[in-house]
Length: 265
Image 1 (cartoon, helix red, strand yellow):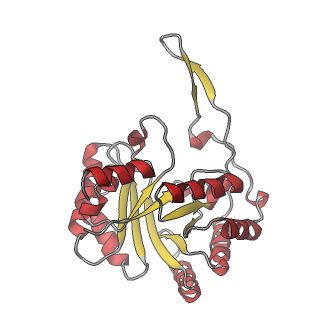
Image 2 (spheres, helix red, strand yellow):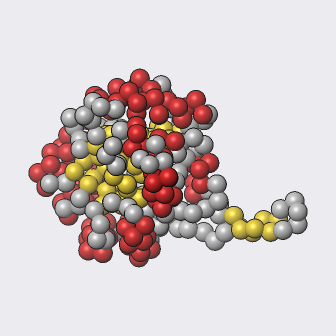
Image 3 (cartoon, rainbow, N blue to C red):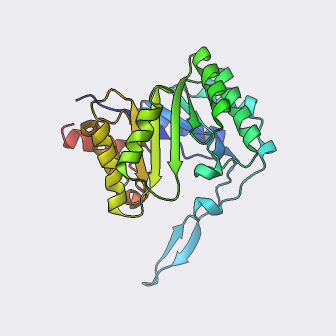
């Protein structure tokens, strides 16, 4: 069975760390990386030390939703895009995720779309465009991307829950001709939700569509781990090695490669 492409979503919040993380991701087995440009507006805080019931203390990082966010004008987008492009050797999926889909971009939609256009103009390998972008605008961006030879991820992120598998599969099918890859990511509130992702992948397998389906929270890693047998085209992994990362539905890129070897995929 064909092995899916592995994309590591970079967690860093500044350019230098992002460049370093991209290099480490490539060494760890990533085929490409996702630059979450919206994360560059975040300021990573210091861990908070808490005391446990046994009297021992441990460091805990506050949730990302509580991290400070800089103003949109704090970053020279064009200059930063060029620095990332010059410094990252592997192919890049360029993403500027808005808050409505779980991202952190602090500016207006017009400012965000301008950054996406600047990334396309720079000749980035891939560009991520959300299905929530106004139809006429996304068509214009897609036309510009195709003219520039930039591959397109057409994505949807349900931060509230998970629809049924039929609706997920329909979203992928209905948009397959628009992009090089259709991505759907939801929030799993139960293992039943996580199974909807798996069922959607099974339904789509063999249809000749390039897709990536996944969920966050417990069970969300199932479709990632079993992607080769489910027919998923691209799997998003992480460089994070934090304890119980599977509770977030994520998987470390090295662990993913090891799992595929162990399962003989």
